[in-house]
Length: 261
Ligand SMILES: Cc1cc2nc3c(=O)[nH]c(=O)nc-3n(C[C@H](O)[C@H](O)[C@H](O)COP(=O)(O)OP(=O)(O)OC[C@H]3O[C@@H](n4cnc5c(N)ncnc54)[C@H](O)[C@@H]3O)c2cc1C
Image 1 (cartoon, protein in one colour):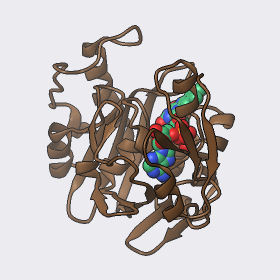
Image 2 (spheres, rainbow, N blue to C red):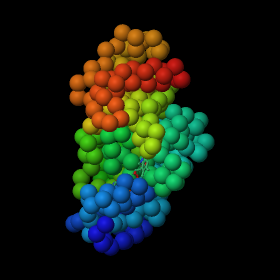
Image 3 (tube, rainbow, N blue to C red):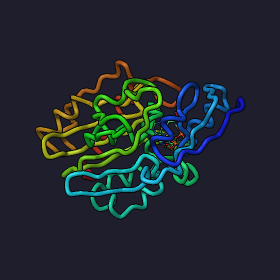
């Protein structure tokens, strides 16, 4: 890892000001530090955002659940409010990595990083989330652009993520047994207006499955997937699973998710 200057911000404005040039934000450090250590990324300054009051915490209303960007996975998993309003989010958070990763990693860091196998991006898409930054509100449908790529501009800070409270929802993951990242993860949500199904781990970026959304919109039950054809075109093939196997697992995980709604 090359040398860098460590700076700590006490509010969002200061963090954004410090994040100019070759600087970047540091949240849990669970992805950023390994990337720097492996020399896949290099920055002159790391701006610690974990001390910013107001960037962490959970707020619930009857329609939405808002989670501050630096809230850790362990805090989401343990939250009574989350368990009561969107239990599938608690399940997702408690299935991330291991206790060390859950105690350091943050929801904002996870979605800013947009790892193709990360869990939270699927929750954002399925639960029609709004990403609140220091500048604007970005709908999840526009946020996730590609592999490790998002709509965030240089120096733009995620402040919170606001999820729509669904009528029913569930997340089902086929995890890599070592890292717990998703080989395939499927998040199904029955919202007031529509059914949304988001798939992570299967391609180079999280995506919504129109085929599954259409099937579950007409019949919100496990049998709805029986006649759905999931194409393996564009899906990942690697040492963990072939594209054809991933296409098969998408069906299995979506059936499992709807069964547990
Ligand atoms: C061993 C291991 C296992 C893991 N398993 C899983 C898993 O099963 N599922 C899963 O989903 N994830 C998994 N992760 C990832 C982990 O959960 C973290 O969420 C993820 O590494 C990023 O969060 P962080 O807070 O550590 O962000 P950091 O590493 O600090 O930052 C990541 C990136 O996001 C940027 N950033 C951070 N916060 C903000 C913000 N508020 N606004 C704008 N940009 C920001 C940083 O500048 C950086 O570019 C695993 C990680 C490890 C090391």
